[in-house]
Image 1 (cartoon, rainbow, N blue to C red):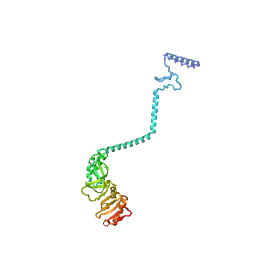
Image 2 (cartoon, rainbow, N blue to C red):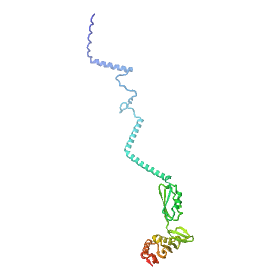
Image 3 (cartoon, one colour):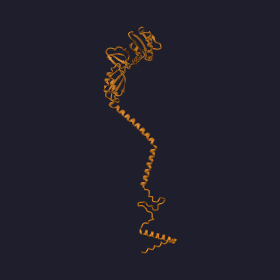
Image 4 (cartoon, rainbow, N blue to C red):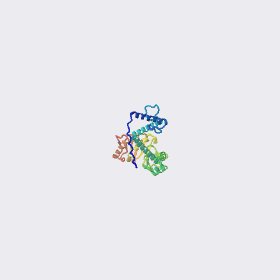
Length: 321
């Protein structure tokens, strides 16, 4: 068997001339043009994805591939600008809004408290259940409270003052009064009674009157402890007004000794003291307080038992006889 002969070595490539390279490039270019004409894709051409915007013909000054600005973009930009502006305003007014919220909260709390208080005050929770009469000395306080019983069950702010006044008018001894509410259920009536100054002998009997001439009571017999008034012109005269002022200015220990008061004018008021019948020439009602002090001092040094007349018409020069 024969041994195969060895293959000859490959021939060494020889360098191509420059003209051959230019010819090859021309051939490649012609081949690419032919493929383009046949509709085949060029492997070296850039690949443009589907849906990508193509540059607008004739557009200048913009980046390649930018789409035109529409009204939606303008509206979105304006909306974003307004949102950013509102955020800045809220950031710079946060303290003011917090202060306003605190003030509104406090005002609301005060309003709710006031409305709650008014609602409770006008509800049966603060209705009158007890009527207390204060200041009654000559009157029966239970009788006065009974006359005001129609106010029981009425809320404190709804107490009818006109009805209270009408009920107290029936008591001539009441000169003035005040109402005081003591929550939750007590109504206090403070009375100021009239002070009687004497008794007038009339056809109906003996009438007790005060310094204003108001008839307080009438009886067939003169009540004890009150002087008999002999006033010319009656309770509406100036002489009666002067006599009332004189009686109010007397100290209690002297007033209780007066058994009669007489006056024909406002300038000649005369008092009669006790069982001795001593007279006090008072004159007018002017300087009555000073005259009362002078009379009191004169009676200490000269008791009524030894004196028939005290003349204090001039308080700086008292005359005792």
